[in-house]
Image (tube, rainbow, N blue to C red):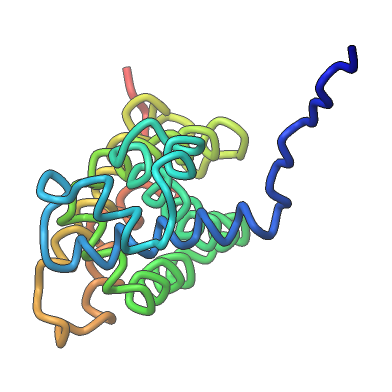
Length: 196
């Protein structure tokens, strides 16, 4: 008696997997433009993306994980711009780079910050900032990392979140100034301070 032939299911190649992932991300962002994440079903995301439930669940346990992944990628892109400028000690360029990136991706950032991804973005912002602070020389070593990281991260993040709630016509240059004066000038410019 011949044994039935078994084959291993073919896994999608990287390009196909990437297209599926991009389709899911695009679908959830499109749907978030009109409704909150709580009001959107996974079926709607799959329909909008033109994909099946199994494809969705192969990559994500739920829509919160999908949105958190999008938010995490965006924060990584944003901070990579700021960190490269900080390594060159150019605070103005750092704030400019951050704001220009957010302005170019304003619809996405507004959607993420108002559509349920703010906590994931804040967490990744803090995590990456801590890693940067712990691996680079600091302008003010007297300032404890455990205080500086949440202060700087929260300050920048809150300014960006506030900006996304403002009218589109609010000047980007003003946001750069707010970040510089309220956050960077306070913590990143070298200061001689003697703590007891």
